[in-house]
Length: 421
Ligand SMILES: [Zn+2]
Image (cartoon, rainbow, N blue to C red; front, side, top):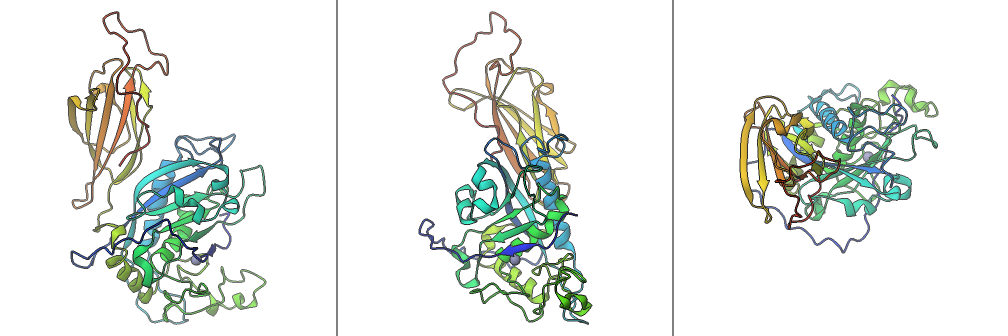
């Protein structure tokens, strides 16, 4: 594991006149006694020419490029890793001999969307600020946005030997008017597995849900500190860092999620209470469902234009999509469906050859809609659509018969193949 100490800072928030205060969302239902499924978006920040991070189609690692691992599949695995950690419930190491009974965290992350941005400055944490990423926020009133940044191109500069993160600060008194986002870095360039990045992501999400550092409360942030998560010398592990003699004493080692350490999966009862209180009040707008079932999530990809055969729909990075409903509509010039085909497919979502279901007309516009369904009975389903054209000679298509015609459509070009929601 390439990771060293997790570096996490929480900078003072500048004045932000651009975002009007959001209204407090009233609590309309009972408090959640089950698992709070918190919406997140994952954003990959790439170089302007599309390298230096996971892309839509590959891992972008020079010389050993893989298309199996891409931004979508990494995001899905990252969610699994994060949720595995949220499910862990270890006894706290501090204070030594703690008799506290761990309480379940009752939090999962659910993936709302995956996005890719090509901007050299925004890709690199040192040449951007967390505030400068505001322009990329999606659904920020209801979804935590997580930005995957890097510091250097693999093999072309001093790659970081650590991964890190930074979160927009919240405090309970102003929790209702804040968008929540975080940036983490080093995952791609350090070739960190998703479950390795998960600890950093969860630490930052812990900040966004109201938690401070036990070892080093953020200056000016007086909330989110718990007596049952005591101050400590912030050791990564035993004798680490070696320069700190306090880390030679096992009684100083923390396993708290909000300290920087190699096993930060522990959360104290007070810390659970802070997060749950916030998720039941001011942060309730970020909760997709209160449900032990994992909500369905996936992204849809396909070319914006195709020929009339070999039309493949790629349900990428699927989470809990055990079977799905597929609808294929031929669209008229006003976007109205001229014909509709619907079927339920009793298998997990993956790559689907659409022309095995319907005969596609040349030079026509279609919309494919997938609703992913989970075998867990109360899980939230998810629906995504893509719109595409046939026979736009990209790639070149076989000739059309003389009766097929080849007239321009009045409704313009196909829309982006990126996922819609
Ligand atoms: Zn932190």
